[in-house]
Length: 383
View 1 (cartoon, helix red, strand yellow):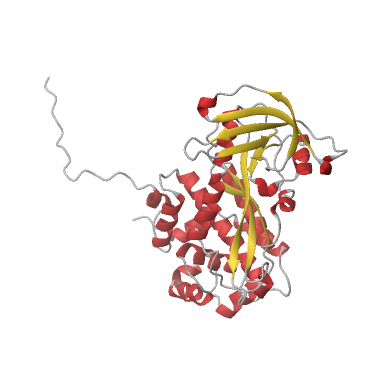
View 2 (tube, rainbow, N blue to C red; view 1 turned 90 degrees about the vertical axis):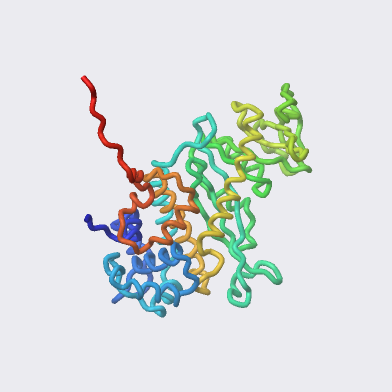
């Protein structure tokens, strides 16, 4: 019988250990560790994400129960007080860079998006993670509410997060959107919360296409009208130039105004884009595709631990959120290389049930077909 490491150990091999240690040295604060390490912190918190542990005590006790297998992960036993101190004091930027490294590895294996054009496709949105002001007083953004906001860019090739920024809950989306660096030729879809006309101009000059919704109070001049097929729900397709007092003296590029009425709900949408080479129907479908980022936020909140936190400081909360995003990329990477038919949620549940089982990881995800219990006897050919 072949010997196998635990499923968790095989999963951690997807993380380049030498690059992790380089990042750990780069983002180390204070004196040198004597008995613990940033790798021990990552393994403990990643195990907590995958196994659904809700507290530091729960994580440490689960690790002690698996002490024989814990050694083979390259990790010493870690105390609850030590893990708490590392979460509070060591910079969370280590896992922010690890997230970028894992995304680069996933991107090479991810399947293409469902549209026929070859441009990279991204969605941009933000979601608030609510925090109790009694436990997290530093997270106040309303009189009675606290929270942090996750600004995320979703790559539709594989539906994986490609870039993220963590801010206070009161931070507006539009200034953060300027920090996202999209490659030239890509298509970015976002809602009206990112309305910034000067940013639209910057995206156009950099060769980046965007699709968003036009504000109701926007002022513009219609320069050209094109025919549309109203049977498909389209109501208008126009070339416009944005005007208004805030744009005086600004040489705004020509933009495209596309109207669409949803046949199911009857609601009318007006889209704004600089992509003149795509059909009006594709523009409407692109904005509908933006719903995938909402589904990703829903998935990560329901399946990973970013609503119940094991630390109370800002750095501890950011560390847990970044590790949750890294775990989501590990699950996606595993799905891409194994080409299994499981959804991300099913894959996560399968890992949770077999985390410390000694079994080949890929055979677990893609088991061989069962043997027939009654094999047919060989037939003799008559000459």
